[in-house]
Length: 426
Image (tube, rainbow, N blue to C red; front, side, top):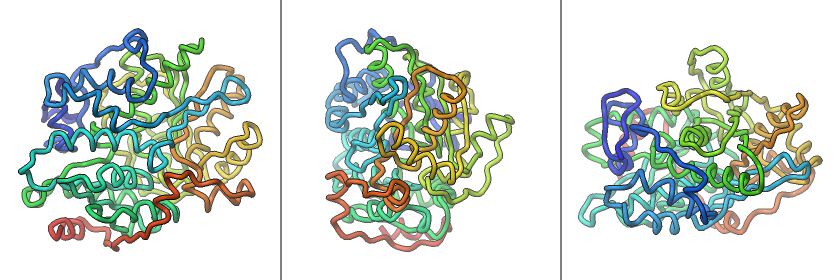
């Protein structure tokens, strides 16, 4: 199967797109045409790895990875993303934080790493995986590529825009992973990464690929947990599952939109942001107006210029049944303890934005089944969550292991030339 650029100037195979990251014309890759799936296509399949294999196989057909799809998914997706029914029987929590770095980003990052490792030729120069992060992407990508032969990782994050534990997890890997604390915002980091890919001289000297959600190699695997949730819900006697998704760069929500476009039983989709309301404003007005990001306590969503909106604006998915909401910090602070009181479950600040949307639907009389998408483990945000609930949040063993090792990030100015210099230095 082939993919095309949102800007119309590039067409290539999925495998080529995995290696390139950004399209050659500066656009983002999208499927050339929509595949169609039915519930029956997944008969006997329930694990995340098995469902991902069914979804990815057509995209990787006629490629060097065609006969390795099952092995790739089994290697990368050895954890679950459970759909947990809460006390009222109509609200569910889609827990995407059971991977090795405690966030949904583990799914796409690990599949991408498994694919690129198999595609790499033994005599090829090292490939540098370049990633800008507002909190969780960087650690997921670093973990996925850590100590993989033939790969280096450069992680850029806003020095003052992540939680203490996130910063540690972004900076603790070492070896082939270099972490840079940028004196700026996530939008600065993202702009630096895009500038690097647009710098032909740099690209000739330092082979680069992307692991941000601009990479279709991240987006395609992320469809798997929405497919799994929808299938599990239908098999339990439910109808199409409605989902409320915390959103920053729009990649997570776009995966749900794509799954629905491919025929699986996803109903309404809510794209919920923090105080950075570029996406809600776009859906309300039809005008895209990027603006500087605003720091919030849901920092992984502090995005003022969401890249994946280009994929949606290019018309490659039906946007009917989409809802949006912007949730400010004070509301997040109220929703975290309210969710605990109502359902007995601790959630992170990002998940709280989606929970706020569903609470609003309930207050308006909506009795349908909604899944609140839990994007990260609350232990990663202890400085926010613990004061709100009045007790410690237990740290999962996989996170505790990384938090126990030393961490080091190098300071970097928010300037493309600073990144170019660092990449050339290796």
